[in-house]
Image (cartoon, rainbow, N blue to C red; front, side, top):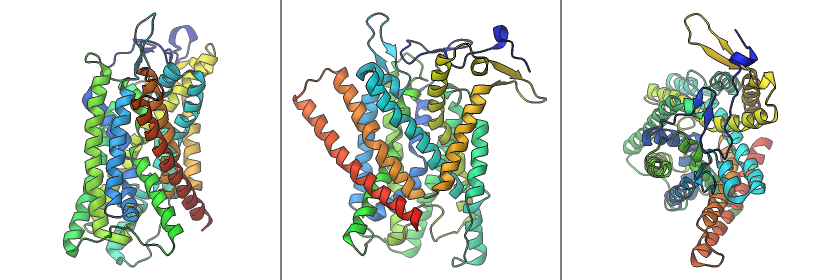
Length: 471
C-alpha cells in the first residue's frame, strides 16, 4: 500500500458544478453513455420499492381513481423530465454553454445561490430518504431471508400458519453490502450496476403481474370496487387515500437524478435530445408495467390487497417463483440504493475537497493489491464518510420499518418542491416567460394544484406513520 502525496495522491473530484467539462484525476472525463444506458439508469431510479405498494394504493382509490392517478403522475413525470433535460446546459457569455451535472447546479445556474441552498436541502434529504426506503424494502424481500422464509413456511405449514420473521438482521446485511458497493468511485462507473438492477426490476414486476393474473383467472372473478376499500369513517378514508397518493408520487420521483444521468451521455447528438428519448421511453415502459401489475394485483385481492405485493399476500404457489421474485427485488434495490446515493456522495465529497484542498486524509488515494483481485484504490474520506452514511440510513430504517407509511411521507415531502416547483421555475427563467402571460398562468395553476395534492398526501402519510409507530 502506498500514498506519497506528490506521486500517488489523487483528488476525489476536480470539477465544479458550473464547469464546462468534468475532469477526473487521470484527465478529462470521457462520457460514453447512450440512450440505452440512460434508460437503464432511469428504470433503476423509477421502478424502485414504490412499485410494490402501488396495488395497495389503487385498492384505496378504487378502479377509476387508482389507474387514473398513476397515469396522471406518469404524464407529470414525462413533462417535468422534458423541462429538466433542457437545463443540463446553461448559457455562459464567456465560455459558451456550461454543463450542469447535478440538479442543484442547474438551480444555482438559473435561479441563484439562495435557491440552490433551499433546493439542496430537499435534494439531499430525498437521496437520504431513498436510502432508508430501499433498506426497509430489502429487509422485507431479502433473498434467503424473511420473505423467502415466509413463503416457504406457508408452502410447508399452510396459509394460516404464524409465519412471522423479524427484519432487523436483514437490514444490517443489506447495509453491509452497501458499505462495500459505496466505494464505487462515482456515477460514471456504475452503468453495469444499473443495467443489472433494471433487468431485476422488470423481472419481479412481471412476476407480480403474472401471479396476479393467474390468481384472477383461477378465482374466476375480478375483485375490487370503483370506490376502493371501504372504511368505518370518512376521516379514515381520507387518510388512506392521502397516503395512497403519496405512495404513487414516490413511485415516479426520479427527476432529482436526471441531470446526473444526462451528464454520463456522449455528444453528439446533444445530451438533451438523448435524455428526452430515454426518459420518455423509460417512463412509458414503467407506467405501462405499473398499470398492468397493480390492476391485476387489485383484481386478484380486492379489499385484501397487501401493502407489499410480493410478501404480504395470500397466494404462495409456485412458492419458488415468489422466492425468485424477492431475490430480484433485493438485487434491484442494491443497485437502486447506489443510484440515489452516488450523487449525494459526489456533492458532499466535492464540497469537502474544496474546503480542504491540501488535507492528506481528504485527497490521498492508496493503491491496494490483493492476491487474485484487481487493484483497489482506497481513499480514507470516501471510506469513512460513505460507511457512516450507510450506517445512518440503516439505523433509521431499523427505527421506522413501516413500508407504506415511509414511502408515502417521502413521496409527498419531495414531490412538489423537486418535481414541480424548481423545474417549472427554471423553465420560466430559461424561456423568459413573463408574468401573467397565458403560459405563465398555466404553469402557476399547475403548481398550485400539485401543491394542494402534496399537502394532502403529506398530512395523510404522516398520520399513518405516527399511527403505525404508536400501535
